Every structure is written in C-alpha cells, then in structure tokens.
Length: 426
Picture 1 (cartoon, one colour):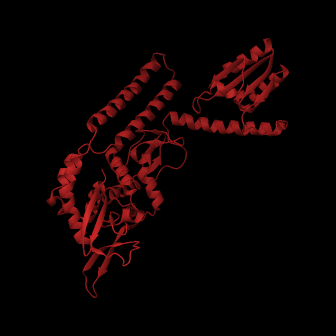
Picture 2: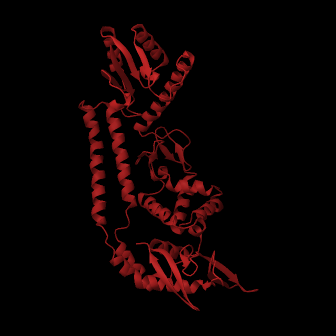
Picture 3: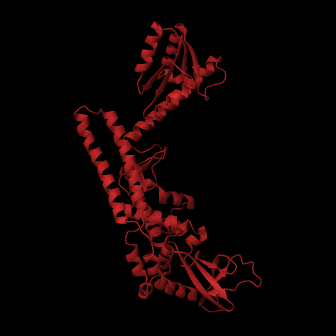
C-alpha cells in the first residue's frame, strides 16, 4: 500500500512547497501549480494502484470550489484512501463535517479574493481602497485630482524648502484649510503613490504606473531630509532656528534649547542657548545664540574642506552608472515581452507575471539610486566653505546646510570662556 502526497499552489499568491514539508517518506508526490492536472492524474492512479494514505496540507487544495472538494473527497473515500491533513490551521475536530465544510468555504472565498487582487497587481492596477488625497481612481490607474493636487504639491514644496514636518502641516491648514495630523503628513512624504508608483499589501512597489505629483529628484531629497531629521527630536526637527537640536553642552552633556528674551517695553529680542537638563551645580549658564552661530559658520569655513578631503569616498559616479545600466537592461526585457507573446514563447499570463517581477526589481534599483549621496560632495563643501555664501541665507536655509553636514556642536566651557567643537556627520 502506497503513501502519496498532493499539494496545490497558486503562482500568483505563493511559491511551490518543498518536498520536506511532509515530514515522512512518501512513495510519490503530486504537485499542481495553478491547474489541476496532477490531481486528476492522482485520482486515475488511485483506481489502478492501491493507496493507503494521501497527505495534503489543507482540504481546499482538493478543488477550486466547495462542490469540487466534496466530490473529490467522496471519490477518494470510495477508493478506500485515508486522507491526512497536516496544516495546523485546520479545525481540531475532524469528525465535525459541518465545521470542515465551513472552514473550506471560508478559505476558498478568501483565496478567491486574494487571487483577484493578485491579478490586478500583475496588471499594475491600483490596490483596493480610496485613492490617496490628490488623486482619483480612474479606469485602470490613478488620475490627478485638479482640485486637491495643488495643495499636496504645495505641501511637498514647503517641506523641501524648510524641512519642517509640523511647519508644513500648519502651512497646509492655513493656506488651504486642509487639516491633517503629523502622522498622516509623514505618510504622505513616504507614500510611493505621490512619486508615480504603486505599493501593494505585500510591500512590493511597481514604478511609473501613473502621473506623479513630485519628481524623482524631489522624492530623493525628501528621503534624505527625513533620514537627517531622525537624529533630532520632533520639536528640534521642526524648530525655526538653524542651531536647534545641534548644540550640546560638553560640561553637563545636556542638549541645548534656543531661549528668547525680550526687554521691557522694547521690540528687540535676545536669543540664548541654554541646557535643557543640566544637573551641574551651579547650573551651566546660557550662551549668546548669535555668537555661537557666527563661530559655527567660521568653523565650517575653516574645517569642512579638510574633513571632506580626508574621506575615502567610493566612486559614486560608477555606482550610479551601474544601477542605471541595470535598470535599462531590465527595461529592455520588458520591451521584448510583446514579441515573445506573438511568437508563442510566452502566453499572456506568463508574460504579465514576468513583467511584474521585473518591474518590482526596477523599483528596488530606483530606490537604491535615490539613497545614494550627492556625487559632488567636494564641490558643495568648497561652496559652503566661503564666508560670503552664508551672508544672505535665512535661518531656514542655514538650518538646511547645517544639518546636511553637522552631527552636533559641542560647547566646551573653560571657566568664564568657552569654545566650539564641530562634529561633522562623516
């Protein structure tokens, strides 16, 4: 008497299982991928060869519908084949036929929905649900909502200029009366839909599926700003002052905050950097913000070129060119698929599945390309090392460049005097 095993896999949803899943030696394994040819062969073989046990993972593997499952179960029972179900998710009480059928029906319905979503994913159709704000659902892709997209575009531009998430949220509410939470705004900044891509529930991304609201260059800059702001507290990341979140007192190891003081009945403001949590006795005193700012600019002009010159930088141009060539090579494969369908080498479904896989690989390569640092770092360092570069910059613009290069600014106290030590990111 033989022991056989049968498995069914839907290529759109899951890979074929390994032979080791059965946990015992079997005489023969029948395996179907998307069809039921091997199942029909199994039933024929059971009529001519005695089979004692049939191993399966789930009851629903025996058919695409509940009626098919019941018919195949009855046929196997007539042939005297005992079925052993190995999946742990199966109902514990196998004697309860109603429970088994209900489980099979629920699973079939769930898999039918998943297969429908998978087919839409293969065709690069939008995932189910409401379109992101700024878009409308079209027939087969997202289309620009001309009434809402200007607000979204302005939100991104404001963040690119000022690098402040909370500030961009306030700007959106004030100018467009569009109120969103900070968490929603953060999701907007990382949502692939605004970059012309689609992200599905399985985490895979398909590139260039619809018209983007922001360009690839803007998206790369947003990602760099978000990575840079992660080093700072939320309040410091959105603070208007350029030194916010960077200054640290070397004496008490406390981060320093920008404090504002005004004179009685006078318009003039005085800014100081004060430790937030100073445990020293007596407490560390505040330091003039403007003095620290001027010394920081002087320190950058003096030390940044040497710091960049000592860097062992990889050939960023070569790395970038390699990724671009890989993307172009994969795109050529996609362009060849229609000809392979016409020649009969691929059927439409196989070609769509292949195109989907390649497009996800292209999206991964584009993500790597966006994460590369600027290739002209030395040129930028030479530019920002000129004192006149800083003369006409606003606080927001200075904040942008400070955070691009500086990890922290340590204020070292020496009795009544103090000095700065600038720690660069690289």
